[in-house]
Image 1 (tube, one colour):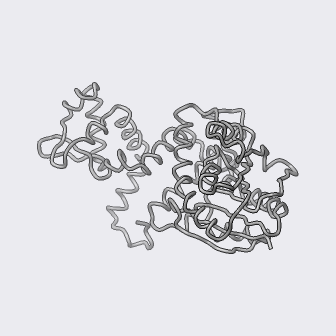
Image 2: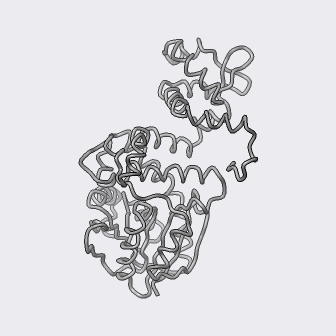
Image 3: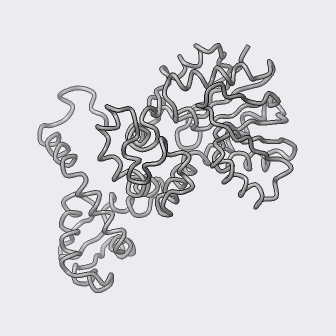
Length: 359
């Protein structure tokens, strides 16, 4: 729970949290090792009134007694496991969520496989406004986006699992909302990535066509998926770099869609992109922006995850962007001249849908 006032928390509780943060990397890596070595899975099958001893876990996982012992001792203190009266161990509620909850697993793997090493360069990234942590993976790219298809397999798997988990859950509901008001003919999916939304749209409506507008590397990935699903006659790609000087966009769509796209840019870049979209849209077209705003969430868990992962953009993605707060973001939209026609909160995993017109 977010502390609102100075005296909301007892001193001993504040000291516990302060020191938990201080040794946080040790706890995180201990849990990662328990996952990697099969200890979490071995404990996950225990019944509510049963546990497994260190010796039994060492035998079952084929690890040394030392390995199991040193990990469990920290995990117990960090409330990841519970020590029972017979000196056996079982997962706590925290441990169960870490091991079994899909959202928590996606967040954990994204942190471990994509962000952990690069975050060590956070301060340097902040002061230089460059994603210095990206050097963990490559020194040849200025941002992570052209390199996504070349990430190490585990990092790539965790990156796309994270991206799709938070975006895929909103697509069906968003399409229901949008097509309930209008029968769209052609969608421009700016920042369409691997084509997940495009394929969802063509599945939802049998007539709509989609053009994915993204970097050439992402369009190449999307084209593989388009071909694999035999959708070449309904989904096309338009490779471009929206940060290139004087980049241009086509003009045919009646629905322009951006899903978790503009959080990849700083405010000046967002203004430039939106200005080009504004000038390229037909008068009767609609722009829909699907974003996650930390200040429009139902609970502190969602807000914590969002605000933490903003630092991924700083250290690894591009050095200058973040998950924005709504008031700050809508001011940029209004500045360009867009009119807010409708707003839909709490879609999927906490997304907000902004429906906009350019006249």
